Image (cartoon, rainbow, N blue to C red):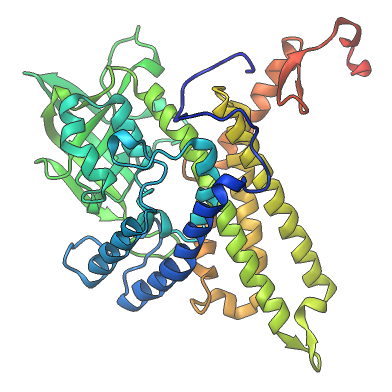
Length: 447
């Protein structure tokens, strides 16, 4: 674990360690983003509710028609972010972003995470897709898509999950692509294709290598498929926890033909590319969840201070409510520490497999606990859309599935750490890595 290295989205690395408090040189831009989220994005949430367009997810549900009131309102908000110098902060400068170093972007990302719509409003929603195209796309693909994606002139989507196939084991994927006369011919079914109905193209993970001697992890590739291609058919948008229009589409690929050059990277590199995408992606999720927790905590605390019971006593004076405050405080601080720790490990060039799995698996559950307490404090009102908690609670529950269900991450951490001890190593929490166990301490009772 400790001696493995790789290259993530690392730019202009700093010598200083990540800090629990926001570094001084990041504070100004972080405060500008916070101000934009609270003063611009929060009202936009209310506007979309009024227009009947905000259905959860990244907010693309109901924004499919470029001339709709909701789409026009979104474009107006995005332009405000561009005019304020807040657009695409974490994207590399080479593709139209502002090139904010990873270590700085962490603190901004947890602020914009306070609203599910903020990444869309600030142009950071496409970061994973933009980096994937930048790192692995052909010259034609980059020229055709990447600048438009970063500018939010078009939207991307990604397809891995399939119905009735365990998403925790992508080697079971059945959708396939075969070469015919220089074209990929794709057949299969995908679902949970986020934003497919609004997207210009989908990056789809398919089997391209066949035969008994092919390693399962070298049998799959990722291919760019324009959503206008004949045979690409969206059959439905799945309702998520009763919410319609969240833009998680089920898509049928029926003899879909695209050029060979639409291949991302090399044949058989889907797992390498997807892990490069999902590793930082899981961390971006966790950073934003800190912001979600902060917002829920603020809303909960306002309720505890304002609500009166028993002849004028504050709700916050009740011991049970104070227990909620304590538990949420600890969950949020622990989540933030785990997130910063995993971020620092990745920024050092390490795979950070244990740290990423731990923060994603535990963080999603902590997010749900914080949301649940906030809803409980509001009573029946917490179930309504009179507060932002109803939507946030649904998103928190879904978080325990996307980018890998809890069980996958729990097993990963357990398996990797047990393996280290089997190999005569132990995990040193002070050093945040595995180290050899001294011979004098090899007997278990001496550890």
